[in-house]
Image (tube, rainbow, N blue to C red; front, side):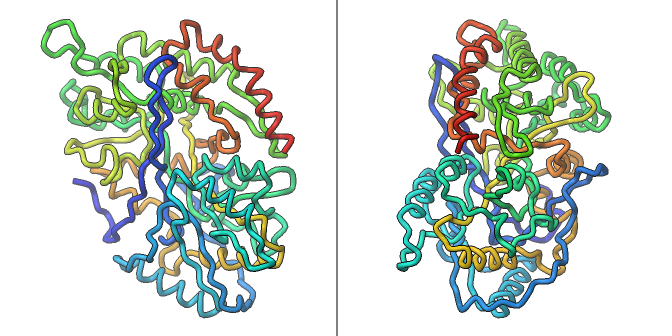
Length: 490
């Protein structure tokens, strides 16, 4: 049973991509889409329980909106998840949002609707081809006036100059609190801004555990929450715990329950993020650099191999499907799993399990001051085929469309839907606020790199083709330095 702290029913987002396998082994790739926060729900302020000056401000700014008549325009927000016909409001919050938006539509004389212009797999081609073939002056418009793209679909159209420079539009003020600042930074190149997000960050990578199995091993079911709260959820404690949870239950010499499992890409991404670094870096001018050889990246890879070689992580079964680790966790063959928080949704990978589950940040390196993970969100763009005037009108409409509904602008409103994923409140109130804090969760820079590092690096875990992680990374350094240089030249 999932906790329902609020009366509202929450829209569950769709499923997820996982690019996985190991070098020379199973290279089946998960092709299901990443979860989304549909734009037709009430917009959530970008905030979290933070004390430092780097936090993303809480709550939308009350900026006066000037009068404008949009002439009855009908704008489409193109995505891959919305229904073709808007669903009827099911909760008081959804009813209030629908009513408020009708007032906005009447006041500024326009309509705006999210619409599935393609399925997940076809979204990049749809965006690229539709914009490139548009001839707006002669009445041939792209399939959407705004595209909301999975973060992995951004690099190709962006590199082809298909996104309008939002920094040139007076209708958007990215100093307003509602705009996701990490998305703005990610999509900034020089003085230009090519993408935006008017929603809070979606929590991503962490560690889920089975509370029943943890209790069976002699621990309190909330032990990981207690470790995180005390600051003791470290790499060494994680390894120690994984070892104690790895057990031969029947004495036949074979392991029956492993301490941990997970997709190879997820394990490495979590542990690298836990150091506060990334596979790439981006400077203040938007220039990216290959960071795979950074000592913290190497340290994280080596630690992952250390845990695996100790026998605490479940190895990939022979001839296994790409998602074998999901079945392993669901069937109780591992106590912990590296995963993203959305997998706890009632309709997702682990949300249907009868056992109670918990969720914490990835463990931090020994001696580190705080916990770190990553985020990766959908990004809204305006096609570059529009004139400045038309792009300004679209931006104006999107700005007022994404304003918070009066009465539902509590700074902690982003938490509401997540209570529906948990059996208790600690996961929401203790773990998830880290993701709203830029100091604790960076945006994966793979977003703006047109090629995937998984085949060269991540799929090679744990064996790394018979060498060390450092050797493998060094062998592809020139390739990835060149890819970064190409991105910077665009």
